[in-house]
Length: 284
Image 1 (cartoon, rainbow, N blue to C red):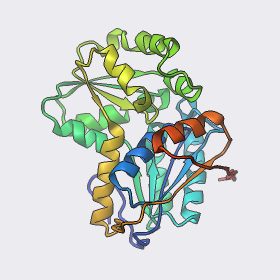
Image 2 (cartoon, rainbow, N blue to C red):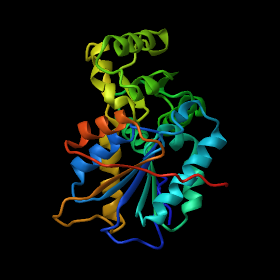
Image 3 (cartoon, helix red, strand yellow):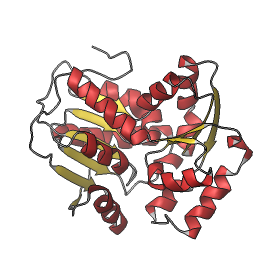
Image 4 (cartoon, rainbow, N blue to C red):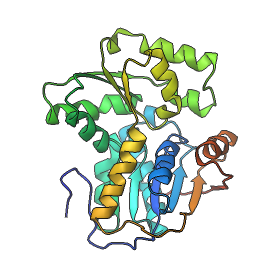
């Protein structure tokens, strides 16, 4: 059956001990993985970072769909009970295709719907800004979904395409990143907003810098924790929540090995991790 919030409940459920599978074009989805580790410490995860093809934000819709389906099949082959698209570009361009492809084999989630539901339900939010990749902003997914739930909400959207390569190259907490952040966020597109949706899972990495630019007067929304909280609710409702006391196991696969990925992963997880290079390309 289909959950009203757009998440697919499986007809053929995996075991609660089965892992959560999540993917992104690079390190950004690790913000979601870290939130899951914090909120659901008993859950095991298999993470796939498609570092050979990043960023997704400047790819065509069909290319994003192809990459997403390839990774989805990899995660299904590893018996994941959830396919979590931990990438806004893929969530906005490939969610329906991934959901239909998975069918009743796993629960499918994206990182957009939990944020939209939260913002739409917060009546104190009157004017929300949305920043993301060209693919995410160009899809209009956030604006369409928010207007559907709250037609009176004022929404200002702006693409910030340099943020992802900046983060992937390790330019954070320095003069270069501050200059790029200032250049984008000072544009008139985001004037008078009271809240800001970070429409890319990479962006929470620079959340403090973004908040500081606005003198902490703008409510910068932590999408990673919203997604992890909704995942917990969905797993519980589906009878798939791992209630065991044993700490979850984490596996990290990448399509291309990068030193910075390992550094960021260790930063988030507070422990050494092993990256496994995995080639998954196929013809679709």
